[in-house]
Amino acid sequence: MSASRTARRAPSQTHSAGVRPLLLDAAGLTLSGLLAEPAGRPPKATVVAVHGGGMRAGYFDGQAHPDLSLLTLGARLGYTVLALDRPGYGHSAAQAPDGLTLDEQSAVLSAALDAFAQDHATGRGFVLLAHSYGGKLALTTVARTPGLLALDASGVGHRYGVDPGERQRMRRHLDWERNWGPLGLYPQGTFRAAETLVAPIPPREAAEVELWPDMFDDLAPRIDIPTRLTFAEHEAWWLHEEPHLADLASRLAKAPVLTIERQSGAGHNISLGHAARSYHLRALAFFEECLRATEDDRPGPRPSRARSTSAA
Image 1 (tube, one colour):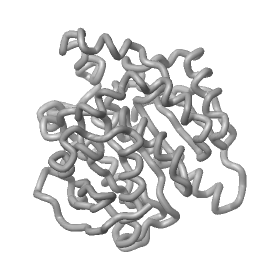
Image 2 (cartoon, rainbow, N blue to C red):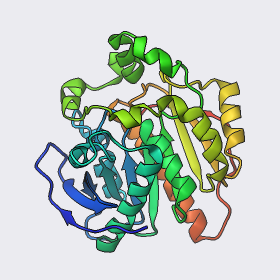
Image 3 (cartoon, rainbow, N blue to C red):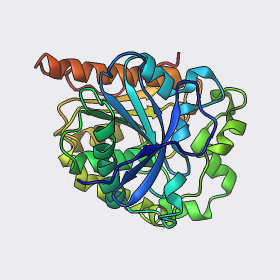
């Protein structure tokens, strides 16, 4: 992997105290993003947060309530948190207006991690926390990039609960309901704040949506790091009943640790809802366990079946 490197300030936008924007040159593109680092100490590791389709990096720094931000929480707990706008979003949208395929995005993301590590302390290394389409990118990146430490993803599975071809014929409000679920799952002001996060889905990205089940079946046997997947209680895009989760787990047999959980009181966009803090704390706890297991040269937690978690 190679990348030109720069880290400079991006145009101002709304973000939490202690979070700063940055631009990062990687594989011929300039990616925008948000960065939070622990104060006065080196990081335990670096959490790379990867957003879903039609969103931006600010998804992980929700502004409707102070408890929503993964960036501020992670930094308080000793992690550097880097949330990047995926290729085709944010600053790179002008450079790649049609977007990139998952394989191409994966190459850019890998290069971005190398570029970031040249100028920033990363602690033990990189862990990935991803949502929805970003989960697809994270899984693809893990399958092709050695040295990543752990993966946590929400809102992504291996079999759709709706035929992707039907999405073109669905009424817009039904598509909205699948993304958000019941309105009461989100703090007051969420949808006004989210206006700055929403972005068009690039056409090359959209064209791959219906290919994902076959793509997953190809890359799943190559996922060889600790992996945690979370499905929201009101998840509507993916099949996630017990038989579906058992089949999903069977395809990730090489992951040394595999945890599949349910997050109660949450819709597809978990990190913007009341359950965000609970989910983020559990994800960071999972990373802590993985780092400790590696440090002590002990095997990690035994793989588990799906279990329920409650919102805090």
